[in-house]
Amino acid sequence: MGPSSGSPISGSMQVEELLERYPMATGLLIQHGVPCLVCGEPVWGTLGEVLESHGKEPEEAAAIVQELKKELEVKPL
Image 1 (tube, rainbow, N blue to C red):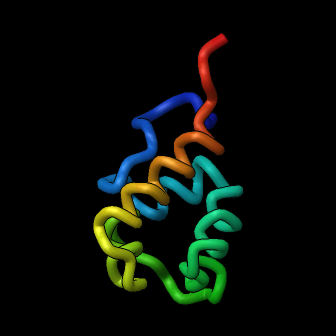
Image 2: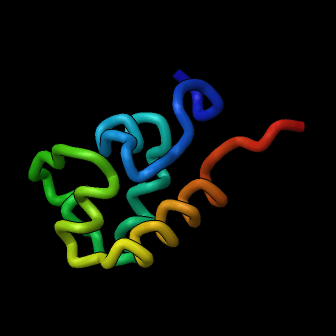
C-alpha cells in the first residue's frame, strides 16, 4: 500500500495505519512531543487520541494533523 492509496491523513486515522503508510510521520510527531511511537510500547487508537493523550489541545492537534498532511501526502501532478 503506497502513500497515495487509502484514506487521507486525519485525526480519526489509526496510528498504526499512519505509521505503516507514512514512516516519516514518526519524526514529525517526535518534534511535537509525541515520542512514544518509537519507544517500543504499542500505540493504540487514532492520531487525535494519541495527540490528546500527550497533552495537545484540539487546536494544536488540528495544526499537527495539517502539518502531517502537508509534509507527507502525495499531491496529484
